[in-house]
Image (cartoon, rainbow, N blue to C red):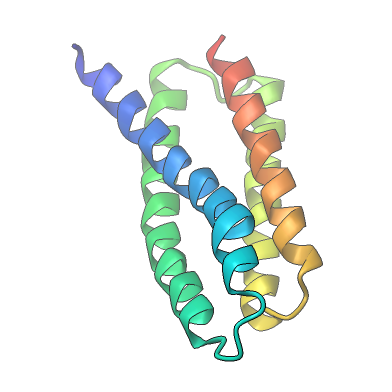
Length: 125
């Protein structure tokens, strides 16, 4: 295992936390708790995921920049589109933090995140 395999592993682990957490919230937590009169457990789970998301995003930015530099990929148009979508998802997350009741933002964040993952596969291939 090389150093760069470790950097890629960290990048993929952070991506799995970010996207996997969204799937878990959307597919399991929200439907299971939707009918409960006390919404605090769902809010608490979302807040805890939010903290983990901040850590994951920091790891993704650092490892992604390192990988792009190592592979001399900054001029790759696919990477540039991916980075544009990363900025978009950041804006969507910011909007979601201000307006958590706008549930369409949840779906938009998830769909853009999936597109980012797809483009990551394309860039790596």
